[in-house]
Length: 423
Ligand code: GDP
Ligand code: IMO
Ligand code: MG
Image 1 (cartoon, rainbow, N blue to C red):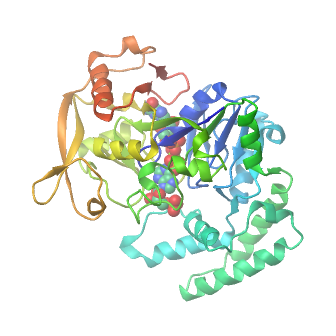
Image 2 (cartoon, rainbow, N blue to C red; image 1 turned 30 degrees about the horizontal axis):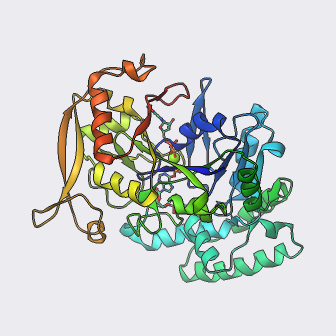
Image 3 (cartoon, rainbow, N blue to C red; image 1 turned 120 degrees about the vertical axis):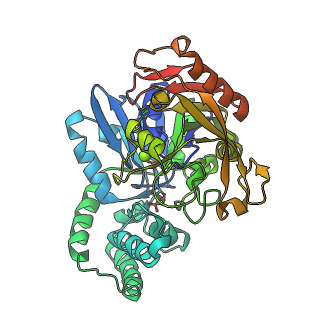
């Protein structure tokens, strides 16, 4: 059996949580492979909205195993809060949640370092979620990080103390106030004690054993391809491999065992935090999109920047991921527009037009070249099958499919589980 991968093709918040929850009944296992509490994945059903940060989005489905893989950076404090927040839903965490011993632990000083680094950048800041992601991945690659398995060893406190000393030296260089550290450490160590009671496993064996025994595994990406550490709009990116290759290294699965690659995108674009965004709208249209799409960050509550769909960027993400199926989200948000714009190319300073995301594009101002198409300008509330889509929406889907060269197999028309149309 091969492992399917679902990942965001834009700058995150495409609706990954919703779709993983919708697809989960077709799978035996849902596994997160990178990122950490910077993610905010929203699920809505039975009139309730849930935002998950570290727990995979299969958790609300019975009999589905949820795995947090080795590629994830995990904050025990956030995890404990998430698990306690779900108590009233009677989720069998003991039975359904497994955590890799090789996942990396976010400690309190990682969050302080995140804040210190951002502050030092002034107006060049990344707009980090300040969850400690960058500093933790830095320590992982620097070979000094703590891993989940370490919390079971007798020398955990010593290892922790060694790392904190290192961090304190850096924080004092940045003259960063660490007066809250003692309190943060108390909460951290309480959470670590709770963490020890969870299922801590060698998840690469679990995942490969499941695949070998014919079980279906879905890998759930966090962030999006345009925030990838290698291929995103560097340095305005996150610190992990958000692309399909990240699913291999973040779970210990061979590339030869990757099956479908589901690429998910909004019918328009959003971005939280700093960095280039060629189709961003700074006007009333962008404001209307934000309002209609309720575009405020699931993790930080920050307003998301909004703009029209960007085909060169989508083509790039499709290419680096080998996407086999596309899922288009939030079509209903475009209900309010009589006309819709599609960015097909970028115009460079010398007047030439390109549809590629080259290295230079990251730094140079580019002008989007738009194709304008008629909107459907009507509610999709009653639309429950593809045949009922307004003609203009069908044309929009057909046009994107033709331009992108990959079938659009799912269209989402609202935040609820039920507002999902398969083609
Ligand atoms: P994720 O990080 O990719 O899981 O996405 P987020 O949960 O951060 O953001 C997506 C937001 O859009 C959430 O508030 C979802 O409830 C909402 N959403 C998902 N699909 C749709 C849709 O088709 N229509 C509308 N209006 N909202 C949607
Ligand atoms: P989900 O999984 C949208 C952005 C931050 C910032 C940059 C780096 O919900 O799609 P970090 O905290 O990783 O150092 O921040 O990346 N970012 C996200 N934007 N959705 C996310 O996750 C994000 N995770 C990080 O806003 O610009
Ligand atoms: Mg999100």
